[in-house]
Image (tube, rainbow over all chains, first blue to last red; front, top):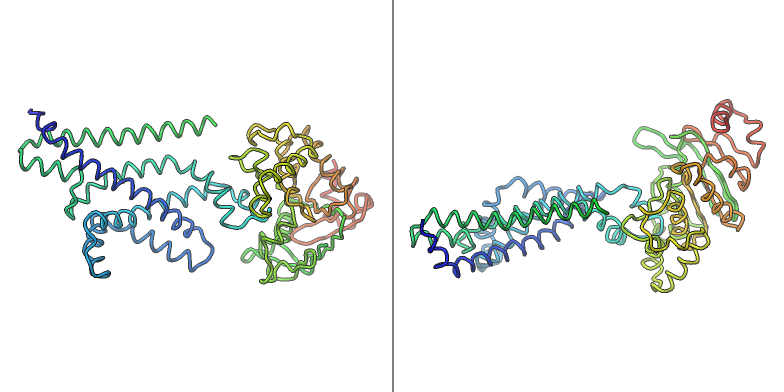
Length: 216
Length: 241
């Protein structure tokens, strides 16, 4: 074991970790917002909203993420006529893909709120948007916290797949350092440790939030 | 104020309302009773457009509910509704429950909405509970907040869907008292309930529904003494004991 390889390359590796966190955070935010729209679309009684949203969700949920990343990397430049760059195209792929999963979380969360709450809102003259925003979503969000945190952890791990289009995120940089220094055991143990720490933070946060919810 | 003309409604093959006719005049209180599944709640939800119906017409304050040109959201601000299970918003305080719609729909300022809400909470007898969440209120208190929430929109009509059925016996009276006050104060009301004491006291008309149709109607206590159909007699025997 020669753990000195890690401090020696720490700056380079941390740069990758920052990139990984950025990718995860932006995918999470974008995927969640798009997921709310798609999830509500899945609950719509209007067919012209319901079917496209359902098609979207089923489509992306039936594809491996790595394929989606490839697609956006190679196909978007053909459509818009210029390359997007690896980071941007990875972001778009992640948002599109994760939105499908968030949509199902949102759908289940909204369905967990009794129909009577919606009726109460409507009966006082509130419209669909106001009822969702003020009555249903705040309650549904609380129920959604545990699956959302789980999804965050998954997104964080999934970002490593962006290596296929050459994005130098954390795991990719581990690989690059290894090919120069030939210290596979130390480097991959370190990588595992870093993933473990970040995912544990997620899991602990989730448990805290769940407990706080029960305490209310 | 409300005219219901030959209204029929189906859930798929199943007919929930059969040719229902009823008129509620301004200031009247109409009590609707009948066994569960007889279409009472469905009728209420048709009146404020929460559920569609396939045949007939309902006219509320001169506006046809089923007319596609009718703004249902606007219409609903004229009709307050109180539910069996209260349906207070659990993530908001009593005061926030009451002020939400006036602020969002009527565009009242927070100050104005809260002043009005406090007056309503005093009217239903629990101003001290303004900043409590529903989970910290008893069933009777929750239902009174729910009534205040409906009144906050200053509706012309109030509908009650079994408002005391989910309450412990000792809390029923506090809710009924509020409703009696409303009724004697001139509110137009439709009340689905089996509280026959309440019906005796304030109802101008009592209708009895079974299997989607109105099979009996009476103006006062005569309804209880001489029911014309055996079905009604059977039911009244059960609820009057």
